[in-house]
Length: 99
Image (cartoon, rainbow, N blue to C red; front, side, top):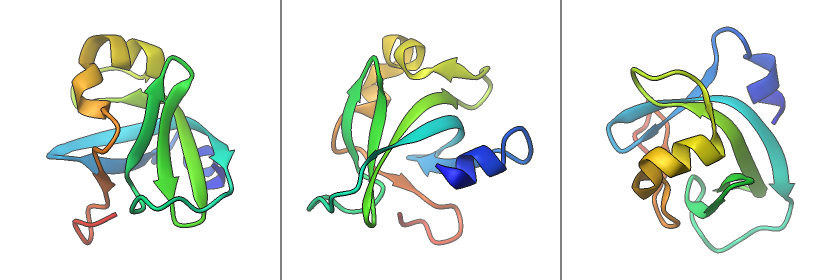
């Protein structure tokens, strides 16, 4: 959450989802309980946001941007490209190719 806010508006936080570089414009802390899913795994996606499991909690992405698009709310992205953000899909970093 702090990194997302710190890098907005420049250089903007991002992560890889498959071969797509997804920019993360707004996010909130969604939980602080460790879950069994690997870090970077989407655990929930609904109109409130896209919840990603992290090392020690969860992050809810509420505004993001797909390549070639403009920043949109999670609800708008899910309406247009919901299949990309199905639970079980995994974000990864550029540097390591892992979450």
